[in-house]
Length: 233
Image 1: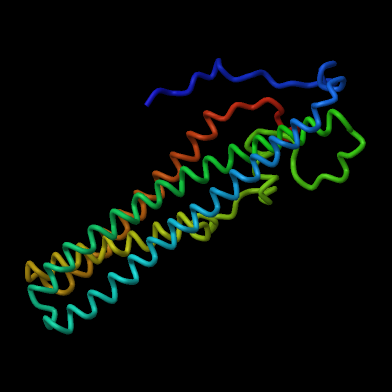
Image 2: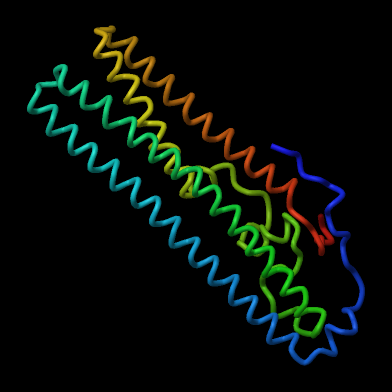
């Protein structure tokens, strides 16, 4: 991947609004139309995020029920192991692509919030006296975006496990650990070694998802184009 070109960032804008902004009678209508477009895009993103998470949870639930039925029919024999090693990788793949897509949706949502912050900045330039009535930010940097989504201070350490991508990541890591444990049972490895390997695979998968999430966030912060930085930044 190419590193973002920092020279492409547009320099911050300060001072009075351009003459055309205040003199154009269509400015307010254009800004409102764009604002509603961004709101619609955020709504579609939320809908897709919930749908993707629901699909994964439904697939995981159905897989657990299917494994329970097969285990009763085969008494946890070779048929159960073979069926598990065919079904669980599919569930793990579904969880992985769900996490990736949820990360993309979060990135898109941050862009829409940034766009609305810019529009709010234009509102402030057109009518500075309305600034006390806004509870969301009018700056489009990282701090401004976090202020608009309700995280005005440092993000809590537990936030990754509260957000939907973190929940899906934990469940998918459990699936990875279960796959490793069932594979070890098929190889007639001892119980202690099977449990240890399952826990190890779970931790490796969870750490991998976390590292990917952190890298995605850092890349967004590097690529974000700031026009109106926060005074506190």
